[in-house]
Length: 303
Image (cartoon, rainbow, N blue to C red; front, side):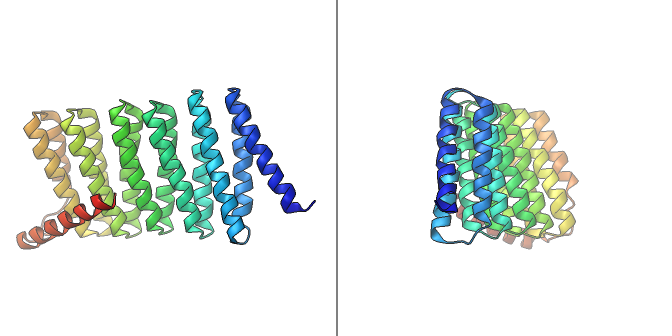
């Protein structure tokens, strides 16, 4: 029997073992199977990019995701976290080998799992998946793979909104913080689009949580925007700084309308901390705001 056939048989046996252990509620055994599948995937990523190889890698990713879904049904959140980490590692390995389509596929599996975990009310599992999305997003920005960074941001927004519906406070706060961190990492690499996307998403999340009268979430958004503004100022992305100032002002006005005095003050203080003085004159500001509105509309349609 050839080495390739033996390898394929090992993969199939490991997948079967993973499902069996998951249904038996054997967390340790399930995690071991997931780790073996991750290792098989790493080996294939380093092989020639032929169609059969690509199909096999994607099948392994999907199998890891499906095993984690069984684990979620069995409420084994520790397994769900391990699966998300494995898939995040696969995404980063594929990105490092410049195999972007595979990295996108792995990231998409993680993102969809995060949404399912949040929808099922599994806060620990959802938070683990969010952390994997964040690690991928930040690493992608450092190697200037803007598609992956932007995809991470979009999934984080969707997960945050789903987690708000299910009152998964840890997942919401972590998602908000990581969005700001990906934006800051993108700013460091002068990746204006993904930095701008992070600011726009944070504004949308801020508006949503203020309407829900949730001050703790709103303050987290304001802090994330302020931190992002500091990073953007450091790296000279003036257009993005205008967006962040605009976002904070929108949130400030909305908190004022809702009577959230403490949050309104936090937004005002954050806005005051951003050094926009003399950056653009009034006419230029109006032009930039129109550009931002147009980008905002395009981004929401894309999403």
